[in-house]
Image (cartoon, rainbow, N blue to C red; front, side, top):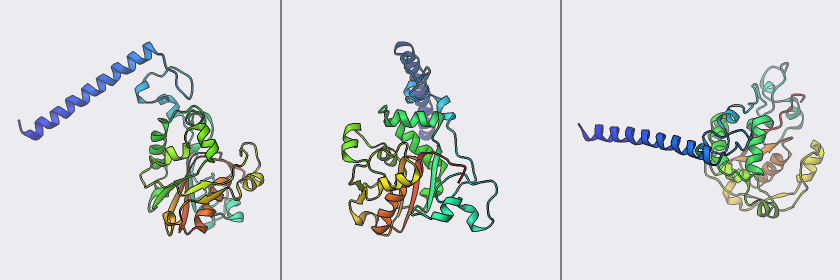
Length: 260
């Protein structure tokens, strides 16, 4: 047997042993500890693969096409022909600083529970899989980009939580990550605020850390959830004013509006 054949056989054998070992470990953990899925609270049959069960990952609700190129919202069935058909009514009227936005799925059901497990439950191990799924669902957002920039938390909130969930996801994407933004004003939570108040709430809340990081760069903003896009727009404006050539956006989840 050649060296290459022996190497291949050894690799296959090792792979089988690893699978068998993981299966045994899953069984032992499931029996002894009875861990629950961090999303649905059901029995976690394969705990070595992460804190969320396969059924919850499969249940993530994707935002159906066609989508607005600017904000990522679903487009209405009846829309104008030509170039403007790629943008939702709100973006056609209001415009915006984000040139192209996409989300992994809708902020509901399983994905909402997964985001909560990461954000409030401290399940940081969810970030790598979320990043992989984001990169797969929206490769066009990352294509040709130079750097990913997470939406920052105020230092007080990040210290209390122990991490910035947007940064955890951004670090796992297949592009260099830079902490190019900082939150300079601690604004109240956006939860429950209408669109106009959300925009006012984050106005002047962000600043650049170093202009050289994003100068003439195509930047991809990363956040966990987008509702009206106010936070992304506020960050994008700072980046463009600081010299970025283009700002795109990726969010784990989006509160999709079908009435715009």
